[in-house]
Length: 217
Image 1 (tube, rainbow, N blue to C red):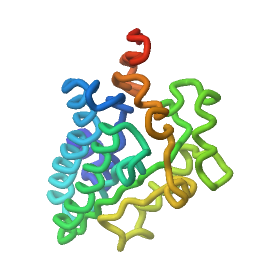
Image 2 (cartoon, one colour):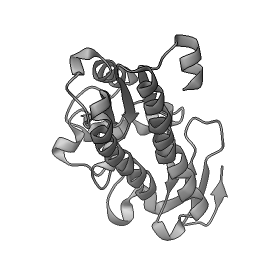
Image 3 (cartoon, rainbow, N blue to C red):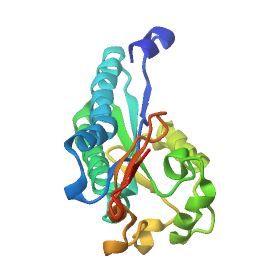
């Protein structure tokens, strides 16, 4: 935030977009360390971003926009692992509560909840491997980063000046028809292995196969 102020003289928009896949697997197999890592990247970072962005915007006056990347996984069961889903649900709650707090300062707080979007966080360099995930949505086009960028640009613009405390689904209608992206019951992908997905951070993903007991990175 300080760097933005130094370069531009003020802060008008903060987009809190950092994310990883985080901890996955049965809850009994989730370590405290992987749980804390997931919430540190997905939720604590949003808290810190809101805290410091709001101070910068109040200091210069004139309001601003704090935009958060949430997820449909935080809105419904079956959209992600329990840790990822809980962290994103916390983000959605933060958006609503902080929007109410900052409204009098003309600072809007809004979110985007992507569905399945073709990014390295989803396919980890293997788009063909995850093509099946896109078949769950009713809209025929695959989710692309540009779909998120277009909504982000709108929410940060004056065209959305009366929208705050809202998280907009950008999911090709996935939630409209119901979701079980990773299977159900014992066939759920997250029940067959455990570990932590560190996304596109460059850090190795750790996976423990719960059926064979093997661990790989």
